[in-house]
Amino acid sequence: MNPILQKAQSLRESLVNWRRDIHRHPELGFHEVRTAGVVASHLHQLGIEVMTGVGKTGVVGIVEGSGPGPTVLLRFDMDALPVQEETNLPFASEHQGVMHACGHDGHTAIGMGVAQILAESRQQWPGRVKLLFQPAEEGLGGALATIQDGVLEHPRPDVAFGLHLWNQFPSGQLYIQAGPLMAAADRFHIEVLGKGGHGGEPHLTIDAIWVAAQVATALHTVVSRNVPPAEPAVLSIGSIHGGSAFNVIAENVTMHGTLRTFNPEVRELLIRRMREVVAGICAAHGARYNFAMDDFYTPAVINDEQATAVVQQAARDLFADERLAHMAPFMVAEDMAELLNRVPGCFVIVGASPDDNHVGPHHNPRFNIDEAMLVDGAALLSQTAINYLRRFASEP
View (cartoon, rainbow, N blue to C red):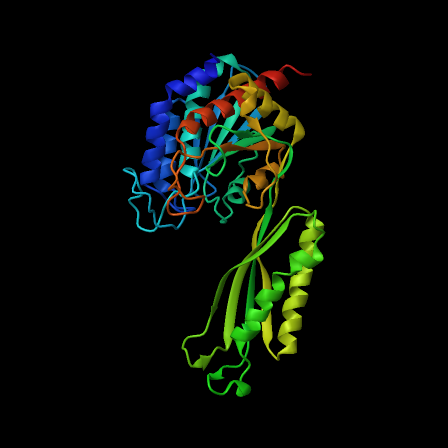
């Protein structure tokens, strides 16, 4: 058996215990104080150089190998979501309204396992591995915060790798592919400003709800009628708020939504058309408006071809070829993209669907994962780092 896989399998109980402990004590983005403490304590015990407070609540560990060589960055996100758990698991969240509903508890446990595998094998590979336990991935800019705190310096990584457990794909399938993988994400805000009044006298008002309904309907045609069918793009309005009483015509309505794209030109086209649609409909009905693209922006995850080949070979070193699968790029976002925009690398999707028909998808109160994939994830990233360091340390 492959020695890295054997070592990962020997850590199975620890990986599960770490994951369940973190799941029981979830923390929202930039508040991962307990989680960061658990990680930092584990790294210290392994004799790894540790930096805390990176990007506010992130942890960085540096594992030095046996000699000079490249630097590999491995990234693991730690934050939970504002979701009330409904799994009835024995290790369910003890924090009201907060839950690990996206698998980051598993990612953190995998990172702790990778740290142990690499620390105990450091005499067998050159260079160094920088372990980034990142805060605030869930739309809060955690990756960018760690970059601003210097995670890509001293030393600068030559390559970056990461993974995401995904419970909507068959457990054990590994999606390791070059090119576009996950979409860029924008967040927009629209406010329709009308003239309120009595519900029985609509002719004396400018009904913000009626205007906003037309805006929302028209915006959902922007993708289908402006973007070439072969270009992936999604526009979704996630919230609409307006009105306070059944017999009062609302003066203002606010809407928030998200835009998902891969092509920057398509993104700019859609933003322009959104502005035009909102302006035109409001003008036609005498309403005013505010339209803004929020500062929130996550670029697309684009995997580097050479880095992807390294991960694919690591997977073949560990598992059967049939474990490798291919997927169409999908429109969820991942701020690992901020790292991959600056350092070549590869982000991997690991199928982790548990054998339970009652489990919900990501960001659902009944979300769960197949914990067997904690072993495979730890083995895959450990083998990937070692393969990269051995290969590129020997090249001139």
